[in-house]
Length: 245
Image 1: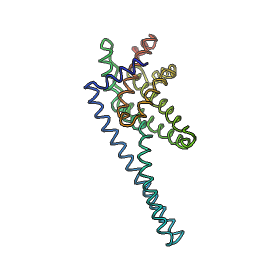
Image 2: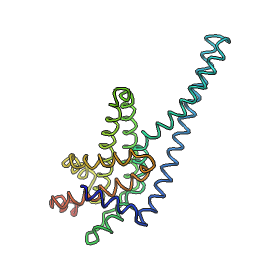
Image 3: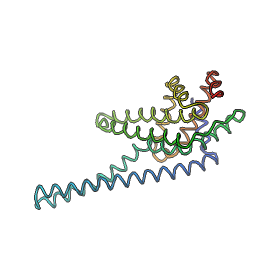
Image 4: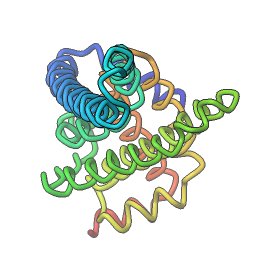
């Protein structure tokens, strides 16, 4: 697995990967900005509406204190959006990855496995569904983990382990589905879930590093292509089944 991680990291500096990286970063930043702006305006609207309601209940004498409170809450909302973008990064990268999985996987296959047939590109709809489902599930899990942030950092641990599980599942299945049907790809992941999750820990570590995490789709997909190749070679029956599918 470490060899696969080194290969994935090394290839990230190649010209073809740099081209994909620029597109992935641009899309990730656009998504993060759009989400951040939307959340900020929603929180600001709720703050303003809440201020008006409170003033109507408490009377005009509460105007100044409520204005100060609304100003503090607006600042807190802005900071919350910034912090929230860090926690949303795994979900964003999961969605972004669905648009570039085949470009990334194809470069890995051509570079490291030139004597083997390349995988079949995933249908755009299938890749989009997988990425969107993982992104939405990620947001749900992270929201559930937020309350535990106050319990001696337990939320951070939950967040890290959840990211490892969710991202490892998505990237491995996307890599495997280039060679086998979706049901078989999922079954293969479950049969090797310890190994896949261990690789997911590396992806979670990668996605937890600010700025660097914008390249998570490249690292995660490349790593899982290598892992899928290695597991397929260990079990020739899986490879043969994939060839017949």
